[in-house]
Image 1 (cartoon, rainbow, N blue to C red):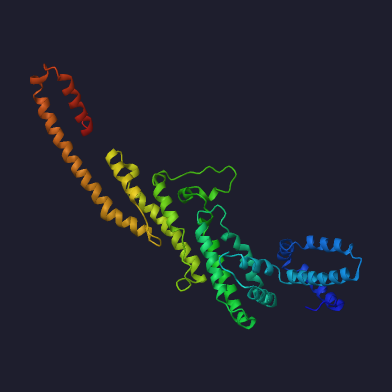
Image 2 (image 1 turned 30 degrees about the vertical axis):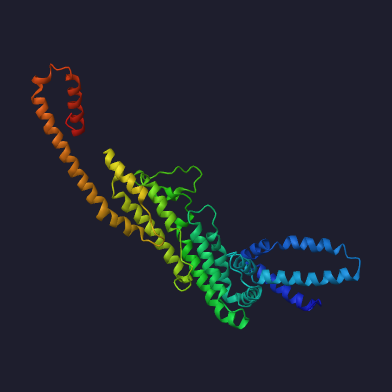
Length: 361
């Protein structure tokens, strides 16, 4: 970098900055100034100026001041580029993107800002979606960041190669994040949000959740489902950035349809303790494999296991209830023969219990 102060160049660039300040990008520029702490850096250089008492300090200050003005110029003429490149570097701490590649990406984005600036600002508005926070889907968000990092990793570092690949990548990244931004469930932080009937009011200060009580009965299974579905492939041969929003939407839909399918079990409506025990056992042994279509699994269980099991139980239970009623009727028909016996009280209690279990009392 040339370390001589070119005042003519500075004046020319300063005029272009003044024009930008009043243009349509003023909001993005102000945000970029804040993100890069330019006011704080300016105060630093103002204070450093007062410490100059030797030529060496003056020369060092002069070079730093030139670098600072270049930074100011880049931040204002291409707001957000530095922040975006910093984000690229921190996408996945296990993936190291070399500095030469990042610097070339930065230079190209500044150079082509007129063509790519809108996408850069759109990306910066939506990257907050991929911060884990207290979301139910921390792993999906992490896997998306890893996919982005892996995509950058395969780029060649040379500027000529990046000039060909980068514009398409930026547009694809913007398209993906816009798609992700429409999936409101990625903001959920509680399994119950999936069946809160007034979830659209959650941002209200006086919000009180209204749960679908039928779905609430299956809370434990729904928790298993959500934990299982918090996954996304990072195999670059199987997934593209442009596919991620669709695949994430499919994951969310599988969860929602699975909840509807669980309610078909109607375990929440059962009063028979034995049926409740059967459901509890089913709930405890239920496991899912990564990548499973949960809705299909539950529908299969419903058809092949649950409904036949309940039907068989009802048939068997009905048989024994009728069998006990036959014994009861016979016993009561002989009452005159045992009502004088010492065990009369025990036999009456037995008859009462059988009647209650049979539902005839």
